[in-house]
Image (cartoon, rainbow, N blue to C red; front, side, top):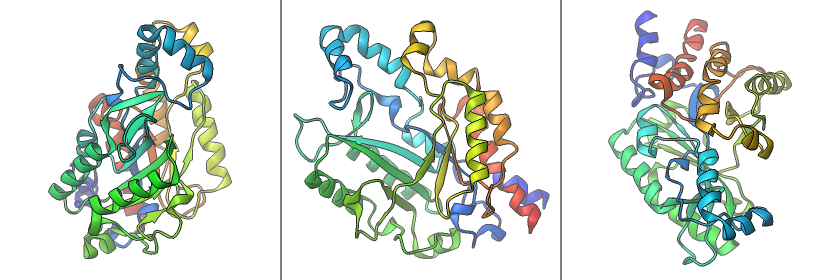
Length: 317
């Protein structure tokens, strides 16, 4: 038993391949999986305008004072500092990708967005994921695509076609119950969640993944919210619980020297202490994916802790 537990938490870059055989037939939605919230915000573009969907007042301010507005957005919209490949090396297996299209750009060029657009395109980032998976053939990644700011139906079709061509035989179909053994036997490495009706009828695409978001800057309220959701009962399949804090305009104005990073890291201990008391599994109050900002902070404590929660399942077998 002791050796099996060490196997779970010792190597984050290939932690799935090191899972004991007692886990191999367990559906992935009953395993504890670390995820990153707003995965691509490490590469936001300070030269970018705000999103077309942003409030009109913010768009006007961005036009008049871009040298003030854009650094402020980056300061409070950056939720990750590690590249997508580094996040995967850190053990992250749920990627939260918010997709957007710039109106003046070619139809098939897509970016990520959180307040403003990213430097990296969707094509570049997903190609990086595909390359990483080629080097880690027994790891499975859940890629959750959402938001789709500024996109029409034709652009959805273009993006879906690109997803399928990029990951091809690595994609786990949505009619499969994905366990590690099932994925390994069929060389599945990618579960694509697509939160839009354009995905209807596509067996390669799973429905949007439910994300529990407290929408508060108070870490104690985040914990209370997640406890309330837990008591209501978990969804049947994949779902994510977000540890992420969320600021509002009042908070930003009253904390001019802070950033999302300083706000989050000052609360990390409290949030991770809550994680320590959770368990994966199929029970009503069990968890599946847990997402955090600034994955890799404090010697990658978040990923190690979430992966280590699977030890509770070992003790039940």
